[in-house]
Length: 429
Image (cartoon, rainbow, N blue to C red; front, side, top):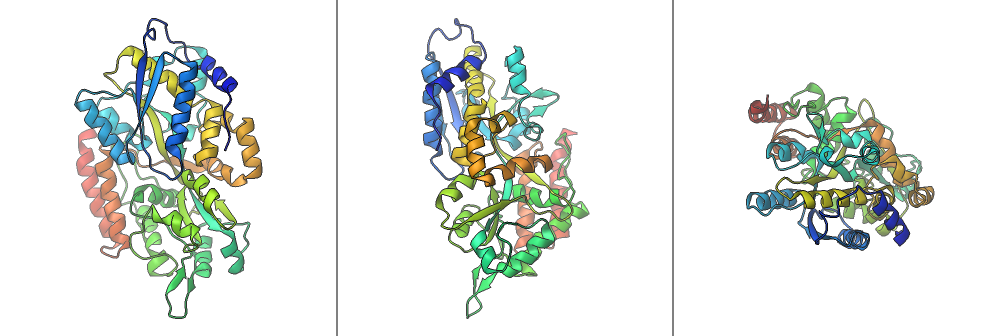
């Protein structure tokens, strides 16, 4: 793991926006809700960043609040706000943008962007990550722990199956063919190694967006008030996922655990998996075999959804606290910290400047898997981001799970989900 020097932190502090001394004359506490949704010592890393920020900003105290997964975190944040206990900032899903906007609890980041340096900082993030950071032309979120799903594959398993260990599947057809060759059974016919495993219980819609994007179709419009669940290409994408298990027999049947999938990969129970790049460091540290990464293989084209969390600043906090929160956000998204965070977690660093740092240059030179997700950004689109996002996403998730379990045909399940979703979204036209 890399360490950031006091000199680096001092330089970052100087690069942060000016906050008037009168606003920070007394100690200001900034509470940051943070979701713990992936493996690894994430809380220790965040605590280290907060402590180093405080060293060069003695007037500000950062208080991380570790609040569970993303759903639990936004629930706790909104509950606190409605109870009058407004936090200053939080890392919440990029896909929660419209929900937070509709609740009228977030302030535009543009309010704090005043200098040329501020504007250059705001323009530095990858465009793919900024697509679902804006509403009505204003920026309400700043990318931090962002990701795309990627395909992990076991190179030893590839060799054993007579496949090139240095080449993952280039498209969906190749993935299907490889998965069949990689599936192993014992003498009784029980599967001991699945060829491909795509989890479907916790991030169903996110990974499904990887399949739909690769099938050249979007799931929602940019305004967040319309979905396309019943598009023929969406139905075709869902049927393709179903066919991996029910037709090919190379994918576990039914609903597959998000949390168990990396473990199944590490234990040799799955030769290829789709999962977040946010698990890359965890897999790197625990795999007892050589593994590769590849872009998500598409049916018609390359494509993947962006995901992960953004920083938000909340209404109701004092001006001094909002300014302090913004200063901390700028500190946390400087290239050196973005690079350090990427190395320690596997998340995609959010700017090209981060990949130009010695930290990431050295890391990616020795571990080229770390740039696969970054390079995939050129084909990435935002994950499903609409008004009433949790409700509308649940309609799709329920439909996909019904399809994968064989409870309903793809066209029936997705047309019903479309009707339910548009009934909710009708209020936002």
